[in-house]
Length: 419
Image 1 (cartoon, one colour):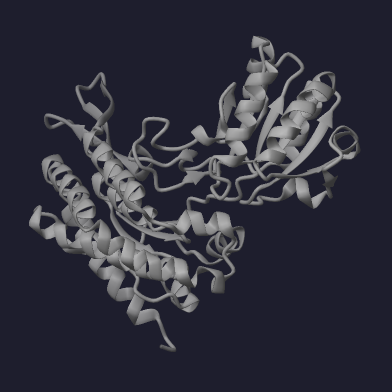
Image 2 (cartoon, rainbow, N blue to C red):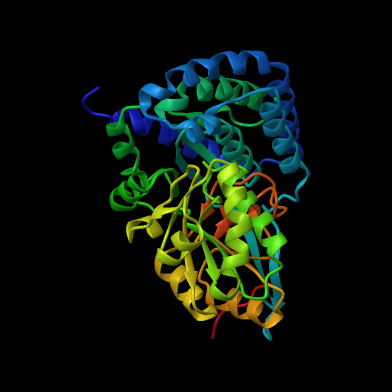
């Protein structure tokens, strides 16, 4: 197709109509759909796995590494996890209609600030079929229609999952176009959607830096951006080194292909020798390649030299940059210079160091004595998330239900007129 404008407008028009209906949908109908969809995902898990197998088989031809293929893969356990996430969203309070604040003016006007849906969300994502369900759940529960555009790497998985999600909408009294999936992977089509500010209220890209930069440059509507996850673990001089090693290994190796995995470790010089002596063995055993500065390499002979770019790189693989720092401030300066404002952690027994770290590190989530992997909507009690924003406006950190709402003022009077 040479011109994608009409194609995109069809999706946009249907989504706008659905969003107006969905804004009025009762909480009970939305929760019924979430529970019904969860049951359907479990019931048809074999079908989902079979379609996913087609994507996994083709993954090497798209250049996906082992971590990315793991992120793409569906199995019984993961499908059950996706279904459970939908049920968790159903259990959360509906933000639509929530009164944020109320007041009464001297002239008797009653003022309320009330949460309302954003409207239509265009969501672009790569290689993770579970995100199809997560995004649909978050958007519908918060009263938004969503247009999903997944990557070519997960096309079969996304189509199968979307079919199950969409088939249950009408049966639960919701508009069938509340969740639409773009059925082409042609990159030119994305450009047409990014021009539809008359129908689309916000675009959320979730994927590589190139994708996000393109969306930010071309979009004619607001964008909630999720840039690189260059996440750090800083081992302070007062750290419990056993705890620090456990946190680092979990942050790096639990799922290295996700955005909240640690990509860099900073070690205070006072504890560099004992920490690297032990953690180095654990990292090597886990298959992690360390790229370090001269002091790291002196203590860890298996490490290779780190370049300036290494400290700015989101590897999404079993690779870790490392540096020994002379003091606390040097660690903070390094994180603010080389990090991506996503997730950074300090391991320390010094309460004042923890306080200063959380105040000075400019990231969407700052962890104290905990793995970077906890910057996740489910882990923070938000249910499923549509992404982790590294922006400061309109939302920051995991974007759950409330982050997909705006608000309006409702003013009630008894005939007042302005003098």
